[in-house]
Length: 390
Ligand code: OGA
Ligand code: ZN
Image (cartoon, rainbow, N blue to C red; front, side):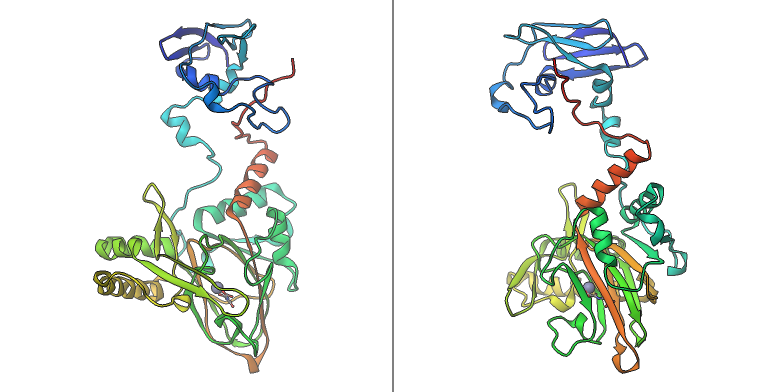
C-alpha cells in the first residue's frame, strides 16, 4: 500500500491510497500507536508510557507522506517525524467492515448441520498434532459447532494430557489435572458411580466454569454407558422461540451450584442461561445434579420453577440429544459452556468402563488456531508493528 495524498482535518486526517479508496485516522489514535522505541518495548510490544500523559489535546505539527508512500507525522516537541508504515495503517484501518473481519479465523458458533452422530466428522488422532491443516480443521470445527470428535487415539492413559499440552497446558480443576472416570466405591461425584448422568455441564459451581474438555474413552466394555451430547445453545434458542418469558426468567434468576464436601467448598450462584454484553448466548449453566437450595426472592420462585421445568424437559427430549457409544481410543472435545454431555447407567459387573477427562482454557484453543493459521501461510496478524531500531 502507498499513500497518494493526505488531507488533514481538525481532529483526524484522510488518506487517499494509490491502490484506491480512502480511510480516516484520528490524531489521538495515531498518537496512541506512536512507532517509537521509547513508546514500546521492541521485544514484547508492551507499552511504556502512561496514556494520560499524551492523550489530551492531540494535534500534529506537520503531516506528510515520505518517498515510500508511508505517513510521516511530526508531533509537538519531537525533533524528527515519526513514520507510520502505509501497509500497517491499511491493515488496521477501522471501518465497520474491517472491524467485523478482525480475528476472522476464530469462527462464531453455528447450528449443528448433523441429524445424527453418524454424520459427525472424525479427525484422525495421528494427524492432528503434526499436520497443520488437520489441526486447523479440528479446532475450526470445534469452535463452530461446539464439539469435535477424534478417533484412532491409543486406548491408554495420557491422551488427554497430549491434547491439553498441544494447546498449551491443562487447566487444573478440583478433580486434579486429569480425572479418571470409573465406578468407584468411594465417590465424591455421581460420575464416579455406575449411575446415569443426565445432560449437564461440568464445573457449574465455578465463578467461571471451565471451557474446553477432552473426554477420552479407554475402556467401554460394560453393558450400558452410552453417551449423549446436547447443543445447549440450540435448546436455549428453541426455548426463546416457544416461551420468551421463560427464557428471560432463566437469564435473570440465580441458581446455586455446589460440588462436594471434603477439602473444598466450591459454590457459585448464576443464571442458567448466561448472556454476554451483546445479549448473545454465552454459557448454559445447567447441571441439575449440582443444583443446591434455591434462594431467590419470593416472587421469582414459581416463575423460575415453571421455566426451569420446561428447559429441563427440552434438554432431555430425545430430539434434542445426539446419542452415541464411545469406542476405546475415541475422544470428544467439547465446549463445556455450550455442549451438555450425558451418559447412561452401566452395569460394572458386566465389564470395565474407564474414561479420562482433562480441561483447558478456550484462550489456548484460539492461540493454537492463530499459530496454525500463520503456519499455513494465511497471516491474520494485524497487531502492532514494532518500531525499527533507529
Ligand atoms: C463427568 C461425566 C461422562 C462419562 O465425569 O462429568 O459426565 O461418560 N462423565 O462418564
Ligand atoms: Zn460431566
